Image (cartoon, rainbow, N blue to C red; front, side, top):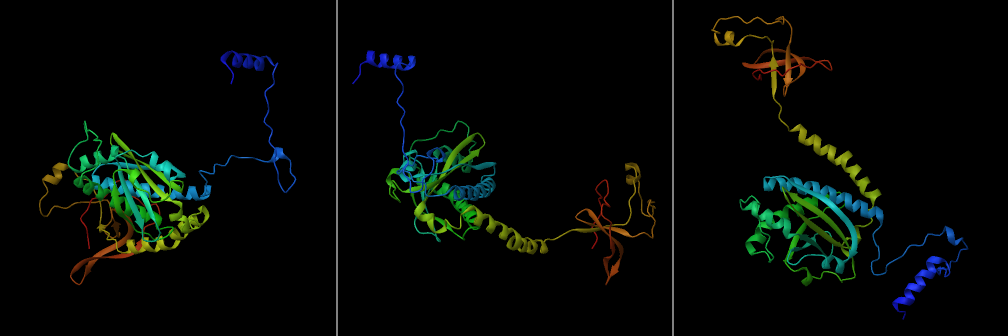
Length: 345
């Protein structure tokens, strides 16, 4: 042991150059003879082994960014206000570190998938839970007090409607990898009482931020590695984006075409246009003649949802008004102002 005077003398000798700092030289033993300067040595923590590659973590983050967008849209419609959801972090750690960083009490939900073995954890911070509950009960979140207590059964029932919508959006996001349905199997307020995996087991934690007006909170999705291990090969960035491209090129195109085929459109035919004064319109009587700038022999314009698309002739078919398409309008044939007219059949 050195006293303070000896420590000061040693530091002064190092600064003056009388004593040289000891350089810790390390030797590298390898089967292949290579220059040690060209070898990159990185520290490896055996307590926190990285079992998920960077490309898989990127694919996992991209997948849950899609989940955040869908969940935010669903929650905004349910809450009748704008709710922003975004992915804040995506990292891997031990289950003990994840549990130790959670507040107590909180909303801790055990989630299970029908396509995977084991359970996941979905934790929602009380900082956003109670503003959501206050909004559902008709409050305005002004001067809202966040209680430090477990949720009551009524509050759990209210927040379960939010969790169900979140799990539905999560299933839609995972559908590009493997069809899944998620459900809550248990709820707890103290995370320390729940141990789904050993404390040193590696888990993937996706941290999301929820913002509703001036209130904000976090939501963490914890996925143990042994649960997600069967789909890790499918979750690699190359295969995941390939699945996404196949989905967009074949299935999504067929689904979009099928939905568009059933969409109803409003058709209207315009014989001619003119401009009159409001006085002339008010004094108009039966038998008055309206003069237009278009010749009577020219075809009418057929509008689809207000956009001119075809030239047509107006007539009757079996006692009903009808139009017969003559030719499509040339590209770029648009009107400078919208046309208001009665719809024809």
